[in-house]
Image 1 (cartoon, rainbow, N blue to C red):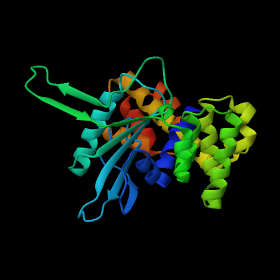
Image 2 (spheres, rainbow, N blue to C red):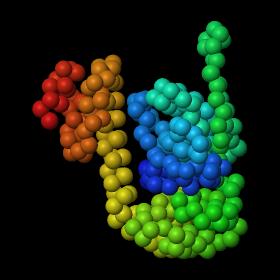
Image 3 (cartoon, rainbow, N blue to C red):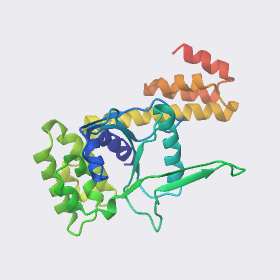
Image 4 (cartoon, rainbow, N blue to C red):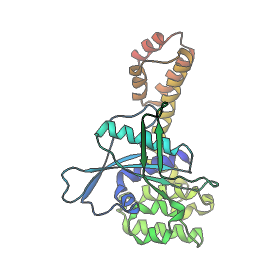
Length: 285
């Protein structure tokens, strides 16, 4: 379910980013929109970047959103890297909100980090807001009447029975969301709930497991993930065999979306005699 969680989270950022802002305590804005940063690092892009317009301000503020399944020691490095990416792209430092979905042992995320040069003459650092979903009361999220927060509710703190909680989630979605969003919200809520509960026993409350395979959004997202995996595997195979490839060639590979075409290219990447041979094959596609 990890790919579904990742892609479902990005859909929530794009369609209900305002609800996540409210959960993070960022309020009073007039409008918002999700945007795509132009500068990205190969294999990594921020989960979400929002432009947020506040009354009286001539330029929108930026809010960088990152979603992690579990706490990890690498999160600070990830956030610092993304901060630099956004600064390079937009020329301003964004607000940062990090969502951690589920606890893992005694690990915690502090919401700060720094990097020093080898000779320690230079340092850059950052600090940001961390939201641990399991520390928030499910009742508090439900009480906001923000339908975009409902898929996060199964990961929040709740003392009652799981079936009662998921029933509340379904009722809120059907009451508050436009009908054309019901399927997507129910499917993503089911994915989030699977991280904490035995979803096979509870899935009928949110529409059943068939919803996960038949939902157009998730089918599209899983297809995109499959293409992304094949793109990375092809680039990795060429780099492992030939010690690196030109960035324009890697960009060409990443632009291909057809699964069958990518499978053929990956097979050829494993056997081709040279980078030139692979490039020539690519031109024939």
